[in-house]
Length: 204
Image (tube, rainbow, N blue to C red):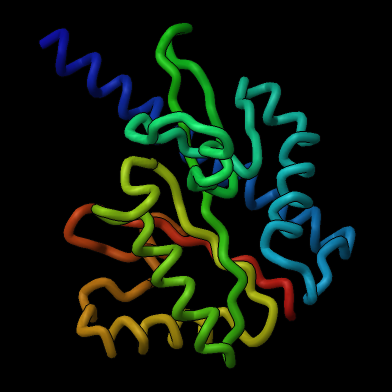
């Protein structure tokens, strides 16, 4: 009984932490729109750097005792250390961390990709180095987090439709991205996990 209660409390904490990470990330996007701080020519790392700065400045982050960093290296214990080995580690765009019960650290990650409705290469990249990296065998398959699409041309629906057409072409119809009304965000369901998506429209 005690174990079940502990699990329930932890899951509630986990869900609240995820909710707060998404809030910080979304509020950073809203601030960037208000400040007109994103140019459509920016690389995704440029956009992430600006959003991360807004997250860092958000008073809610300190209130919620959340720390964050950008371009987080994923250490690989299987790699034999030698000169330059760290530069080869996979890097995920953003990491949020907090502590539970003052001893257990919990981490939430964001991977971001630029996307345009008329650029099939970027949509393919959203799948291959975005979605697939969160699945078994991918770079971030052990990471709890979400995938963000930075829309630099076209409409959100058109970008999602383009991604889904490519998934359908790959015979992955069951993995198509859809709007989950209950969760109030986008989601794709995979054999290994369900993955949340946020789409930030900088083009309209």
